[in-house]
Image 1 (cartoon, rainbow, N blue to C red):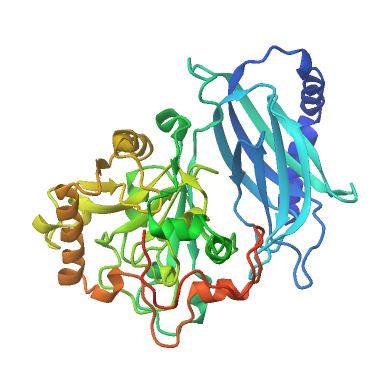
Image 2 (cartoon, rainbow, N blue to C red):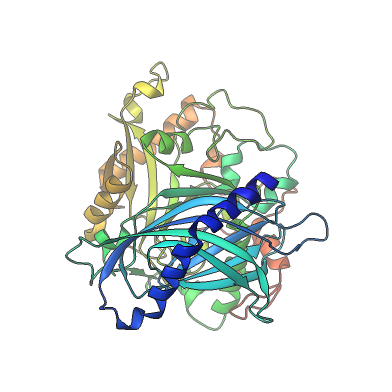
Amino acid sequence: MSQIVGAIHHVANRTREEVKDAAGAFGDAQHVERHFVDLTFKFIGASGLPKMDVVGTADPYFVAKLDDQLSFVSTVKPNTLSPVWNELWKVKNVPNTATLTVEVLDKDNGNITDDHIGKFTTSVSAGAKECAIESMSLRRNRGTFWLNIESTPSTDAKAERRQYVFDGPIRFSRHFSPTVGRLTNLNDARLYSTWKIYIKGVKMFFGDTVQHWNRNYKAAQTIFQGPTSIAVRSTIQAGHRMLYARSTTNGFGVINGPEDIFRLLLHGNVGGTECAAPGSPSPYAHRVKPAVYTYIIAVEDDSFRFSETGAAFFVDFASKHALHANCAPAVRYSGEFHPRPEGGWENFSDDIPDDRVRWELVIDNNSGTYSPDPLMLPDLQELLQYNFPGFTIHALDRNDPRLIHSRESCRAYALDKRGVRQEDLQPHIHTGEETLSHSALLQGSTPDGGPRGVEGTAVGEPVVN
């Protein structure tokens, strides 16, 4: 640990003069002509954080925001007061007058909210920065944070129209449903897992277009309209917070190429490493799983969030897509997707090694809750090809016969060749198993005022898209 702290202080001493120059530039920002820049942030680390836990020290992470337009959430560093992150964040088309705000928090596993350590604000001028972390209430120094910013002039002729474009690296996180730890016999950990991938360039393909909730869809009306909708949303939002909570047990990684996407789709993989959850190992652990996934692309952070459509935690929630979207009134896009070998699952044989197959992703707009515009499917296809080069992307309308055939062939192969059970294709629970919705009810009221103990849907009610 002393070596880590020493390394951080070495960086600080070496760049102290550069920090002074950056501070001077910040003071003169009001006299600088506004233009657009492409930025690379390197969040190095922090030291001198206060002890936050009764047992241990702290589990720090941070949330960085650019003018409240775009955010970056770091990994959690367990049991340390001198975390080292060395995490990168690239953003295009940023006004040179923008402000970066960083809040440092202490992760409390098992709690919905985390403890605030402190925050700071700085300009986006280039150079190394040493920033004092201050308490919001007492204005006390709560440690020191180091970062470095690289800045180059934007080359995008449309920078004014599409500002704050995330440009990588493409990071992912894997989350388990909190109910998974209470199971003694887990058949497939993937049915209790969800993934979030921060994809880049969303505004370059979608602009400011979003897909609002479908006012003609009964399930969506239940969530977003009428006197009982607050109670319904409160349950779904509590479930979302529990499902996507930052934790020291999350899986984290970076997508560098198609092989990284390939690994996320394996039977025995729930993150960047093989599944460590309880359960019997699958004989197909190293094979791509023929499965259908429910996804949304979020407006708030342009993240691609997904889980298997048969995920157990969907039980008793009014909408799968609303759970992933945290009941957002709009998303960038939503639907389902599935992987397939070139030529389709109906023409595939397990005798062919997966690394000798050309893999494709078939994605659609099958979401009743948000009913995405089918005219934007070509834009969706281009967005995914931009993020996942090496995969052939097919974007098809929910009513396209080719989609229906491909999806059902995927499911048929899972049932006939991979030992997947029919019940695993749709959300279900086993006798005595606690549902995520029930756990969410026990967490109490939510920020939008939902009362505790009010359920969104009846137990056993079928979940919809």
